[in-house]
Image (cartoon, rainbow, N blue to C red):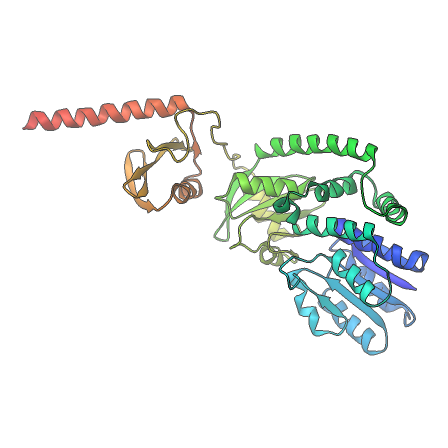
Length: 402
Protein backbone atom coordinates (compact mmCIF):
# COMPACT_ATOMS: atom_id res chain seq x y z
CA UNK A 1 0.00 0.00 0.00
CA UNK A 2 1.22 3.49 -0.86
CA UNK A 3 0.57 6.52 1.34
CA UNK A 4 0.93 10.08 0.12
CA UNK A 5 0.90 13.01 2.54
CA UNK A 6 0.98 16.24 0.59
CA UNK A 7 0.07 19.93 0.69
CA UNK A 8 -3.47 21.15 0.07
CA UNK A 9 -2.54 23.77 -2.56
CA UNK A 10 -2.33 23.25 -6.35
CA UNK A 11 1.23 21.91 -6.27
CA UNK A 12 0.44 19.48 -3.47
CA UNK A 13 -2.78 18.27 -5.07
CA UNK A 14 -0.89 17.95 -8.36
CA UNK A 15 1.18 15.31 -6.58
CA UNK A 16 -2.03 13.60 -5.49
CA UNK A 17 -3.30 13.46 -9.07
CA UNK A 18 -0.02 11.93 -10.22
CA UNK A 19 -0.16 9.36 -7.41
CA UNK A 20 -3.73 8.42 -8.38
CA UNK A 21 -2.65 7.93 -12.01
CA UNK A 22 0.34 5.82 -10.92
CA UNK A 23 -1.22 3.68 -8.19
CA UNK A 24 -5.00 3.88 -8.65
CA UNK A 25 -6.82 2.65 -5.54
CA UNK A 26 -3.59 1.31 -4.05
CA UNK A 27 -2.69 4.73 -2.66
CA UNK A 28 -4.14 6.54 0.34
CA UNK A 29 -3.83 10.31 -0.13
CA UNK A 30 -4.05 12.87 2.66
CA UNK A 31 -4.04 16.58 1.85
CA UNK A 32 -2.58 18.64 4.68
CA UNK A 33 -2.01 22.22 5.71
CA UNK A 34 1.53 23.20 6.67
CA UNK A 35 0.68 22.73 10.33
CA UNK A 36 -1.29 19.49 9.88
CA UNK A 37 1.41 17.29 8.34
CA UNK A 38 3.36 16.51 11.49
CA UNK A 39 0.35 14.96 13.22
CA UNK A 40 -0.27 12.74 10.18
CA UNK A 41 3.37 11.59 10.11
CA UNK A 42 3.38 10.99 13.87
CA UNK A 43 0.31 8.73 13.56
CA UNK A 44 1.85 6.87 10.62
CA UNK A 45 5.03 6.12 12.59
CA UNK A 46 3.08 4.89 15.62
CA UNK A 47 1.66 1.96 13.63
CA UNK A 48 3.54 -1.02 12.13
CA UNK A 49 3.85 0.05 8.49
CA UNK A 50 6.84 -1.93 7.20
CA UNK A 51 4.94 -3.07 4.11
CA UNK A 52 3.78 0.47 3.28
CA UNK A 53 5.55 3.04 1.15
CA UNK A 54 5.22 6.61 2.43
CA UNK A 55 5.61 9.61 0.13
CA UNK A 56 5.66 13.14 1.56
CA UNK A 57 5.52 15.90 -1.04
CA UNK A 58 5.54 19.71 -1.03
CA UNK A 59 5.86 19.80 2.76
CA UNK A 60 8.55 19.34 5.38
CA UNK A 61 8.50 17.73 8.82
CA UNK A 62 9.54 18.98 12.24
CA UNK A 63 12.66 17.76 14.04
CA UNK A 64 10.84 15.03 15.98
CA UNK A 65 9.33 13.49 12.84
CA UNK A 66 12.61 13.96 11.00
CA UNK A 67 14.26 11.65 13.51
CA UNK A 68 11.28 9.30 13.48
CA UNK A 69 11.36 8.97 9.69
CA UNK A 70 15.08 8.32 9.78
CA UNK A 71 14.64 5.51 12.29
CA UNK A 72 11.78 4.13 10.20
CA UNK A 73 14.03 4.12 7.10
CA UNK A 74 16.94 2.54 8.99
CA UNK A 75 14.71 -0.29 10.15
CA UNK A 76 13.67 -1.11 6.59
CA UNK A 77 10.72 1.21 6.14
CA UNK A 78 10.15 2.79 2.76
CA UNK A 79 9.82 6.57 2.74
CA UNK A 80 10.60 9.40 0.31
CA UNK A 81 10.19 13.09 1.05
CA UNK A 82 10.16 15.22 -2.11
CA UNK A 83 10.13 18.99 -1.76
CA UNK A 84 11.38 22.16 -3.45
CA UNK A 85 11.43 24.68 -0.59
CA UNK A 86 14.66 26.26 0.61
CA UNK A 87 13.68 25.60 4.22
CA UNK A 88 13.74 21.81 3.55
CA UNK A 89 17.24 21.57 2.07
CA UNK A 90 18.71 20.15 5.29
CA UNK A 91 16.73 16.93 4.69
CA UNK A 92 19.00 16.06 1.76
CA UNK A 93 21.44 14.63 4.29
CA UNK A 94 19.14 11.60 4.56
CA UNK A 95 18.79 8.90 1.92
CA UNK A 96 15.02 9.43 1.99
CA UNK A 97 15.25 13.19 1.48
CA UNK A 98 15.00 14.66 -2.02
CA UNK A 99 14.85 18.46 -1.97
CA UNK A 100 15.63 20.42 -5.12
CA UNK A 101 14.89 24.10 -5.71
CA UNK A 102 15.91 24.34 -9.37
CA UNK A 103 17.01 22.23 -12.33
CA UNK A 104 20.40 22.38 -14.04
CA UNK A 105 18.92 24.51 -16.84
CA UNK A 106 17.93 27.16 -14.29
CA UNK A 107 14.21 26.46 -14.26
CA UNK A 108 12.64 26.33 -10.82
CA UNK A 109 11.23 23.02 -9.64
CA UNK A 110 7.86 22.26 -8.10
CA UNK A 111 6.89 19.28 -5.97
CA UNK A 112 4.61 18.07 -8.78
CA UNK A 113 7.39 18.13 -11.38
CA UNK A 114 9.89 16.43 -9.04
CA UNK A 115 7.42 13.72 -7.99
CA UNK A 116 6.43 13.05 -11.61
CA UNK A 117 10.04 12.64 -12.68
CA UNK A 118 10.84 10.44 -9.67
CA UNK A 119 8.00 8.01 -10.42
CA UNK A 120 8.98 7.79 -14.10
CA UNK A 121 12.66 7.24 -13.31
CA UNK A 122 11.78 4.45 -10.88
CA UNK A 123 9.41 2.67 -13.26
CA UNK A 124 6.29 3.49 -11.22
CA UNK A 125 4.58 5.57 -13.91
CA UNK A 126 4.74 5.91 -17.67
CA UNK A 127 4.90 9.43 -19.17
CA UNK A 128 1.77 10.80 -20.86
CA UNK A 129 1.51 13.90 -23.06
CA UNK A 130 -1.54 15.25 -21.26
CA UNK A 131 0.15 14.69 -17.92
CA UNK A 132 3.34 16.35 -19.16
CA UNK A 133 1.28 19.44 -19.99
CA UNK A 134 -0.59 19.38 -16.66
CA UNK A 135 2.65 19.06 -14.67
CA UNK A 136 4.20 22.00 -16.54
CA UNK A 137 1.14 24.15 -15.84
CA UNK A 138 1.42 23.40 -12.13
CA UNK A 139 5.17 24.04 -12.13
CA UNK A 140 4.86 27.37 -13.90
CA UNK A 141 2.11 28.55 -11.60
CA UNK A 142 3.80 27.46 -8.39
CA UNK A 143 7.12 29.06 -9.33
CA UNK A 144 5.36 32.15 -10.75
CA UNK A 145 7.10 31.63 -14.11
CA UNK A 146 3.70 31.85 -15.78
CA UNK A 147 3.70 35.64 -15.37
CA UNK A 148 7.13 36.08 -16.90
CA UNK A 149 6.17 33.74 -19.76
CA UNK A 150 2.63 35.22 -20.02
CA UNK A 151 1.30 31.67 -19.72
CA UNK A 152 -2.20 32.57 -18.49
CA UNK A 153 -3.39 28.95 -18.77
CA UNK A 154 -1.29 28.09 -15.69
CA UNK A 155 -2.97 30.79 -13.60
CA UNK A 156 -6.39 29.70 -14.83
CA UNK A 157 -5.66 26.15 -13.67
CA UNK A 158 -5.07 27.48 -10.17
CA UNK A 159 -8.25 29.56 -10.39
CA UNK A 160 -10.21 26.43 -11.30
CA UNK A 161 -8.60 24.57 -8.40
CA UNK A 162 -10.01 27.09 -5.92
CA UNK A 163 -13.47 27.15 -7.54
CA UNK A 164 -14.25 23.51 -6.76
CA UNK A 165 -13.44 21.05 -3.97
CA UNK A 166 -10.14 19.17 -3.87
CA UNK A 167 -11.95 15.88 -4.35
CA UNK A 168 -13.80 17.11 -7.44
CA UNK A 169 -10.67 18.70 -8.88
CA UNK A 170 -8.68 15.50 -8.41
CA UNK A 171 -11.42 13.39 -10.00
CA UNK A 172 -11.79 15.76 -12.97
CA UNK A 173 -8.06 16.01 -13.67
CA UNK A 174 -7.41 12.26 -13.41
CA UNK A 175 -10.23 11.47 -15.85
CA UNK A 176 -9.19 14.25 -18.24
CA UNK A 177 -5.56 13.16 -18.38
CA UNK A 178 -6.53 9.52 -18.87
CA UNK A 179 -9.04 10.25 -21.65
CA UNK A 180 -7.32 13.02 -23.63
CA UNK A 181 -3.97 13.25 -25.36
CA UNK A 182 -3.66 16.97 -24.56
CA UNK A 183 -4.71 18.92 -21.50
CA UNK A 184 -7.39 21.60 -22.00
CA UNK A 185 -10.30 23.24 -20.19
CA UNK A 186 -13.83 22.48 -21.35
CA UNK A 187 -16.13 25.31 -22.59
CA UNK A 188 -18.02 25.58 -19.28
CA UNK A 189 -14.78 25.89 -17.34
CA UNK A 190 -13.55 28.59 -19.75
CA UNK A 191 -16.74 30.56 -19.07
CA UNK A 192 -16.56 30.40 -15.30
CA UNK A 193 -12.82 31.17 -15.41
CA UNK A 194 -13.57 34.35 -17.34
CA UNK A 195 -16.04 35.32 -14.63
CA UNK A 196 -13.54 34.45 -11.90
CA UNK A 197 -10.89 36.64 -13.51
CA UNK A 198 -13.20 39.64 -13.35
CA UNK A 199 -14.01 38.84 -9.72
CA UNK A 200 -10.29 38.70 -8.82
CA UNK A 201 -9.66 42.05 -10.49
CA UNK A 202 -12.46 43.68 -8.45
CA UNK A 203 -11.21 42.10 -5.23
CA UNK A 204 -7.61 43.24 -5.78
CA UNK A 205 -8.77 46.80 -6.63
CA UNK A 206 -10.67 46.98 -3.35
CA UNK A 207 -7.78 45.64 -1.29
CA UNK A 208 -5.37 48.16 -2.84
CA UNK A 209 -7.27 50.84 -0.90
CA UNK A 210 -6.72 49.02 2.41
CA UNK A 211 -2.94 48.43 2.45
CA UNK A 212 -1.01 49.88 5.42
CA UNK A 213 2.68 50.86 5.47
CA UNK A 214 4.46 49.70 8.64
CA UNK A 215 8.08 49.25 9.71
CA UNK A 216 8.93 45.84 11.16
CA UNK A 217 12.51 44.78 11.99
CA UNK A 218 14.13 47.38 9.70
CA UNK A 219 11.84 46.43 6.81
CA UNK A 220 9.17 48.57 5.19
CA UNK A 221 6.14 46.28 5.04
CA UNK A 222 2.78 46.54 3.29
CA UNK A 223 0.08 44.94 5.44
CA UNK A 224 -3.37 43.99 4.17
CA UNK A 225 -6.16 41.77 5.51
CA UNK A 226 -7.49 39.26 2.96
CA UNK A 227 -8.77 35.70 2.91
CA UNK A 228 -8.53 35.06 -0.84
CA UNK A 229 -6.27 35.43 -3.87
CA UNK A 230 -3.05 35.90 -1.90
CA UNK A 231 -0.71 35.31 -4.84
CA UNK A 232 -2.47 37.79 -7.14
CA UNK A 233 -2.86 40.32 -4.34
CA UNK A 234 0.74 40.08 -3.14
CA UNK A 235 2.08 40.40 -6.66
CA UNK A 236 -0.07 43.41 -7.62
CA UNK A 237 0.51 45.24 -4.34
CA UNK A 238 4.25 44.66 -4.59
CA UNK A 239 4.39 46.05 -8.12
CA UNK A 240 2.28 49.08 -7.24
CA UNK A 241 4.36 49.79 -4.13
CA UNK A 242 7.96 48.90 -5.07
CA UNK A 243 9.25 51.00 -2.15
CA UNK A 244 7.91 48.31 0.21
CA UNK A 245 10.25 45.42 0.96
CA UNK A 246 7.46 42.84 1.12
CA UNK A 247 3.72 42.39 1.47
CA UNK A 248 2.20 40.63 4.50
CA UNK A 249 -1.34 39.30 3.98
CA UNK A 250 -3.37 38.59 7.12
CA UNK A 251 -5.92 35.77 7.04
CA UNK A 252 -7.62 36.29 10.39
CA UNK A 253 -10.11 33.44 9.96
CA UNK A 254 -7.35 30.95 9.21
CA UNK A 255 -4.93 32.61 11.66
CA UNK A 256 -2.23 32.61 9.00
CA UNK A 257 0.08 35.12 7.37
CA UNK A 258 1.27 35.00 3.75
CA UNK A 259 4.42 36.86 2.73
CA UNK A 260 5.14 38.00 -0.83
CA UNK A 261 7.92 40.07 -2.39
CA UNK A 262 8.91 41.17 -5.88
CA UNK A 263 12.49 42.00 -4.81
CA UNK A 264 15.55 39.78 -5.20
CA UNK A 265 17.28 41.18 -2.11
CA UNK A 266 14.46 40.09 0.23
CA UNK A 267 13.93 36.44 1.24
CA UNK A 268 10.50 36.13 2.82
CA UNK A 269 11.10 32.47 3.72
CA UNK A 270 13.53 33.78 6.34
CA UNK A 271 10.87 36.15 7.68
CA UNK A 272 8.29 33.35 7.84
CA UNK A 273 10.90 31.20 9.59
CA UNK A 274 10.98 33.68 12.49
CA UNK A 275 7.44 32.58 13.32
CA UNK A 276 7.78 28.85 12.61
CA UNK A 277 6.85 28.99 8.93
CA UNK A 278 8.73 28.72 5.66
CA UNK A 279 8.43 28.55 1.90
CA UNK A 280 10.12 30.20 -1.06
CA UNK A 281 12.30 33.29 -1.23
CA UNK A 282 9.47 35.28 -2.82
CA UNK A 283 6.42 33.50 -1.40
CA UNK A 284 6.10 32.00 2.06
CA UNK A 285 3.79 31.79 5.04
CA UNK A 286 3.39 31.01 8.71
CA UNK A 287 0.80 30.57 11.42
CA UNK A 288 -0.18 33.73 13.28
CA UNK A 289 1.76 33.37 16.52
CA UNK A 290 1.25 35.80 19.40
CA UNK A 291 4.42 37.66 18.43
CA UNK A 292 3.37 37.87 14.77
CA UNK A 293 -0.11 39.03 15.78
CA UNK A 294 1.30 41.91 17.82
CA UNK A 295 3.67 43.02 15.04
CA UNK A 296 1.42 42.60 12.01
CA UNK A 297 -2.09 43.12 13.41
CA UNK A 298 -2.30 44.87 16.79
CA UNK A 299 0.43 47.49 16.34
CA UNK A 300 -0.48 48.61 12.77
CA UNK A 301 -4.26 48.49 13.36
CA UNK A 302 -4.70 52.23 14.13
CA UNK A 303 -2.67 53.27 11.04
CA UNK A 304 -4.31 54.81 7.99
CA UNK A 305 -4.07 53.02 4.63
CA UNK A 306 -1.56 54.16 2.02
CA UNK A 307 -2.87 56.96 -0.18
CA UNK A 308 -2.61 56.13 -3.87
CA UNK A 309 -0.72 58.37 -6.29
CA UNK A 310 -2.85 60.67 -8.44
CA UNK A 311 -3.14 58.79 -11.74
CA UNK A 312 -4.89 61.22 -14.09
CA UNK A 313 -2.46 64.12 -13.93
CA UNK A 314 -1.29 66.12 -16.92
CA UNK A 315 1.32 68.30 -15.20
CA UNK A 316 2.38 66.64 -11.93
CA UNK A 317 3.81 63.46 -13.35
CA UNK A 318 6.65 61.24 -12.22
CA UNK A 319 10.11 61.86 -13.62
CA UNK A 320 9.09 65.36 -14.80
CA UNK A 321 11.87 67.78 -15.76
CA UNK A 322 9.92 70.44 -13.83
CA UNK A 323 9.84 68.32 -10.66
CA UNK A 324 7.23 66.11 -9.01
CA UNK A 325 5.27 67.06 -5.89
CA UNK A 326 4.30 64.65 -3.10
CA UNK A 327 2.43 65.14 0.17
CA UNK A 328 1.86 63.10 3.33
CA UNK A 329 -0.64 62.96 6.19
CA UNK A 330 1.41 65.47 8.18
CA UNK A 331 0.77 67.92 5.32
CA UNK A 332 4.44 68.01 4.45
CA UNK A 333 5.11 68.82 0.81
CA UNK A 334 8.00 66.87 -0.67
CA UNK A 335 9.40 68.02 -4.00
CA UNK A 336 11.61 65.81 -6.19
CA UNK A 337 13.43 67.78 -8.86
CA UNK A 338 16.33 67.33 -11.29
CA UNK A 339 19.58 69.20 -10.64
CA UNK A 340 22.27 68.60 -13.22
CA UNK A 341 22.80 64.88 -13.57
CA UNK A 342 21.09 63.95 -10.29
CA UNK A 343 17.79 64.25 -8.46
CA UNK A 344 17.29 66.20 -5.25
CA UNK A 345 14.57 66.37 -2.62
CA UNK A 346 13.30 69.25 -0.55
CA UNK A 347 10.70 69.09 2.24
CA UNK A 348 8.52 72.15 2.86
CA UNK A 349 11.02 74.25 0.93
CA UNK A 350 14.08 72.99 2.79
CA UNK A 351 16.60 70.85 0.93
CA UNK A 352 17.11 67.46 2.57
CA UNK A 353 20.74 67.09 1.45
CA UNK A 354 19.71 63.80 -0.17
CA UNK A 355 20.94 63.26 -3.72
CA UNK A 356 19.99 60.41 -6.04
CA UNK A 357 21.20 59.22 -9.42
CA UNK A 358 17.69 58.34 -10.66
CA UNK A 359 14.15 59.56 -10.08
CA UNK A 360 13.11 56.07 -8.97
CA UNK A 361 15.68 56.10 -6.16
CA UNK A 362 14.49 59.53 -5.02
CA UNK A 363 10.84 58.45 -5.05
CA UNK A 364 11.66 55.31 -3.08
CA UNK A 365 13.28 57.48 -0.40
CA UNK A 366 10.28 59.83 -0.30
CA UNK A 367 7.73 57.02 -0.03
CA UNK A 368 9.70 55.05 2.57
CA UNK A 369 10.75 57.95 4.82
CA UNK A 370 7.77 60.30 4.39
CA UNK A 371 4.93 57.94 3.36
CA UNK A 372 4.01 60.52 0.72
CA UNK A 373 1.92 60.26 -2.43
CA UNK A 374 1.90 62.10 -5.76
CA UNK A 375 -0.61 64.97 -5.48
CA UNK A 376 -3.14 66.16 -8.04
CA UNK A 377 -2.43 68.78 -10.68
CA UNK A 378 -4.24 71.63 -8.90
CA UNK A 379 -2.07 71.27 -5.79
CA UNK A 380 1.03 71.06 -7.96
CA UNK A 381 0.17 74.19 -9.96
CA UNK A 382 -0.56 76.16 -6.76
CA UNK A 383 2.76 74.99 -5.34
CA UNK A 384 4.70 76.11 -8.44
CA UNK A 385 2.95 79.49 -8.48
CA UNK A 386 3.80 80.04 -4.82
CA UNK A 387 7.34 78.89 -5.45
CA UNK A 388 7.73 81.26 -8.40
CA UNK A 389 6.22 84.19 -6.46
CA UNK A 390 8.60 83.56 -3.56
CA UNK A 391 11.56 83.39 -5.94
CA UNK A 392 10.50 86.66 -7.64
CA UNK A 393 10.22 88.41 -4.27
CA UNK A 394 13.73 87.31 -3.34
CA UNK A 395 15.10 88.62 -6.65
CA UNK A 396 13.37 92.00 -6.18
CA UNK A 397 14.59 92.27 -2.59
CA UNK A 398 18.12 91.54 -3.77
CA UNK A 399 17.99 94.21 -6.49
CA UNK A 400 16.63 96.90 -4.08
CA UNK A 401 19.56 96.33 -1.71
CA UNK A 402 21.95 97.11 -4.58
